[in-house]
Amino acid sequence: MHELYDVIILGGGPAGLTAGLYAGRGGLRALIVEKGQDGGQIALSSDVENYPGQSAPGETGVVLAERMAEQAARFGAHRCADEIQAVELSGGTKALIGLNSTYRARTVIIAAGAHPRPIGCENEAQFTGRGISFCATCDASFFRGLDVYVVGGGDSAAEEALYLTRFARKVTIIHRRDQLRAAQSIQDRVFAQPKISVLWDSVVQSVNGGDALEIITVKNVKSGALTVIQADESAGMLGLFAFTGYLPNSGLFQGLLEMENGYIKTDENMRTNIPGVYAAGDIRVKDVRQAVTAAADGAIAAIQAERYLGQTDKEPSAGVSRPQARKKM
Ligand code: NAP
Image (cartoon, rainbow, N blue to C red; front, side, top):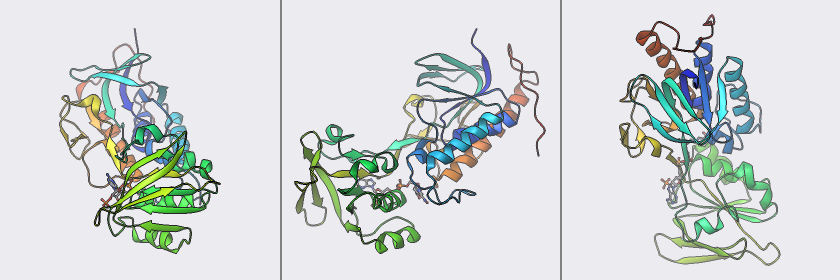
């Protein structure tokens, strides 16, 4: 028989890893299921400068995520790599059915996060991974000495544009409005960086090329004018990095959980409409999506799951021995 966990946490970003830390520390038998790399969106970030205690300059999000994962593991949270395909959330025992196995638990914390919004231009799929990227940390080095373009005007676009100046010859931000949304402090750095320029009121209409991205056609949304940007002969290719926000990874829960625009609705204790099922981090309806707010959600969800388990059943999980609850500080 498969193990019955007290809590399964779906997703290994800041919300999921913090939930794992708190659940493990609370003495729950916890499993974190993550299909890829730990860290979620912070693993795509070249520099996380606003996470409390994260002050080492230039340290990537991957390193921060590794420390979070180690901390959760130290408190006994198990982790496995699998991609969940279906879920059964009603009843006292919940099931998450993955490609490799089925996982069962008495509570579930959904911390599956969000994925980058596509640019929405012609031929995007054809050139994704061949010039188009959604991760500067992962791909910037491929564009050393080349011209790169960044779509978006938020914190991510501005920060990653700055990061890309370390590699690229020139960085051009393509933004659909006439002002950036990014925090003023980041904007100040962007405008002070001589390698960065901005194409205002502009969107990418199409991308073209051979094996690699060679042509970007940009449309001015006010005048309708088209500008064709072509890689020069010596470079042979262009880079196009997109940071236009994120979409929730909530497809598995459509029709099961209450949602708003694809985001899972919770109360302030991260409870969804199904008892014993919680959502934490960027996947839930909220105003501020930051690594620190995701981590806070994860902590709240784990504490609430622990209370729920205590209320519904004072005994350890059927068939499994719960580790001794550790003393809390
Ligand atoms: P965001 O703040 O939602 O910004 C998305 C940007 O993309 C906006 O400028 C938006 O334009 C543009 N955009 C959206 N859809 C578009 C489309 N279809 N075509 C062209 N442009 C489009 O996303 P984000 O920058 O990824 O940040 C997400 C959250 O993480 C935010 O809360 C942000 O503050 C936070 N974050 C914080 C930091 C930091 O503080 N260090 C770093 C990264 C992210 P409009 O401005 O016209 O809407």
